[in-house]
Amino acid sequence: MRRWVGIMEAQERTRFGYATAKIAEVRQENYRVKTFVLDCGVEARPGQFAMVWIPGMDEKPMCIVNDDPLTFSVAKVGPFSSKLHGLGAGDKISFRAPLGNSFAIPTGAKKIILVGGGYGVAALHFLARVAKGKGVEPVMVVGARKRDDVIFEGDFAKLGVKTVVATDDGSGGVKGTAIDAVRQLLDAGEKFDCAYACGPEMMMHALAAVAQKEDMACQLSLERFMGCGIGICGKCDAGGGLVCQGGPVYNSRAAFKLEEFGICHRDTMGNKIRW
Ligand SMILES: Cc1cc2nc3c(=O)[nH]c(=O)nc-3n(C[C@H](O)[C@H](O)[C@H](O)COP(=O)(O)OP(=O)(O)OC[C@H]3O[C@@H](n4cnc5c(N)ncnc54)[C@H](O)[C@@H]3O)c2cc1C
View: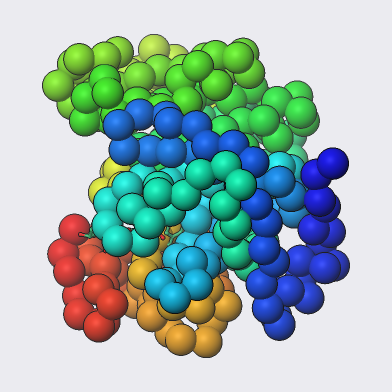
């Protein structure tokens, strides 16, 4: 029987401590992304994140891919993510969740477009499921460098979501960027009530520009180095706002007001690094 970490309990834990759960299942999505399914659930909304803690090592934010059972998809890029990739079914993981704000589906919306890159594609699957449940039709655009980088295509197909893949080298789907694919859909006369994105910041910046031109609502899940996830350490300042407090989801107008959106992010020491 799966353990339920209820919303009140999760909020208490967010302020005062951590929940610990066992990994029930690990799925290899591609050569660098693994999905971890825990043996517990939290009550969360698409766009929210968890601070995942490996005792003795570090604590890092991860998008919630599913809230029950609690699920994360992790790209192996450095020490923390490599350590996570080394864990298997039965190993324990600690976390604080849910944190941050979430994507919102505008009242009356009929059709929305979701644009993802990397593990951001997995995070948007949660939004697609919720949209379908509300009778809203999502169209998914997956951007990747090459065919091998594409994840969750089958999961979106199972959900009955039209999915367009775009690869930089043309090894899968449309040749070009995710934004080229979005422009093709718009040029073909498709209309969307809102665009959503999770993935590389320059992709989200380009989508925000398209949305502004098309007068289309747009929500983006921003990513910055985070220390605490609850507005104390100040490490995730994006130039005028802490991402863990004001986000991670911003509408495009609010994102453009952040001085560092589409320009730079910061390393662990706070030094600016250009995208
Ligand atoms: C709100 C939020 C949600 C997040 N959700 C997820 C998630 O669902 N899944 C996930 O895997 N990560 C997610 N991250 C990123 C994650 O928290 C870590 O930054 C990441 O796991 C890298 O940590 P590391 O110690 O392994 O590598 P680091 O030493 O921090 O990074 C190693 C190198 O990889 C680069 N890098 C960092 N992340 C990526 C990336 N995704 N793709 C390519 N290069 C990268 C760094 O710039 C650095 O050069 C999220 C971050 C935020 C702020």
